[in-house]
Every structure is written in C-alpha cells, then in structure tokens.
Image (cartoon, rainbow, N blue to C red; front, side):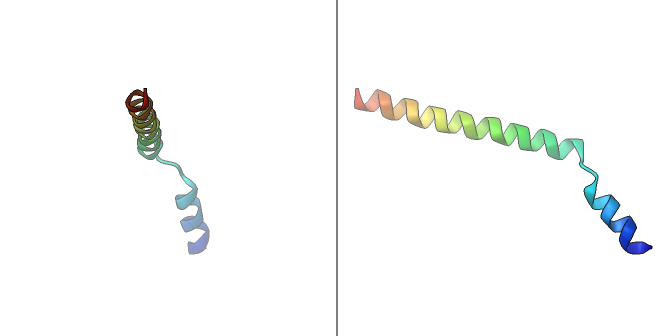
Amino acid sequence: MKKNKEVKETKRIDKGQIFVKIMAGILACLTVFSVTASLIYALI
C-alpha cells in the first residue's frame, strides 16, 4: 500500500517546475541566438 502512494506522489507535476523549465528553455534559446548573431557580426 505504501509503494502505491509513493508512485502517485512522484507522478504529480508541480507548476513551479514547469515554469522553471520553460524559462530555462527561453534563456537557452536566447543564449544560442546571441552567440550566433555575434559570430555572424564578427565575420562580416
């Protein structure tokens, strides 16, 4: 019985974690974009 409760608790997704993951993804995209833009600007 205890094992079933632990599995249900781990499957629950926290809204804070989703927000943090979305923000991390946006920051990663902005970082990649800025690096490529600066490299292109340096090459021209």
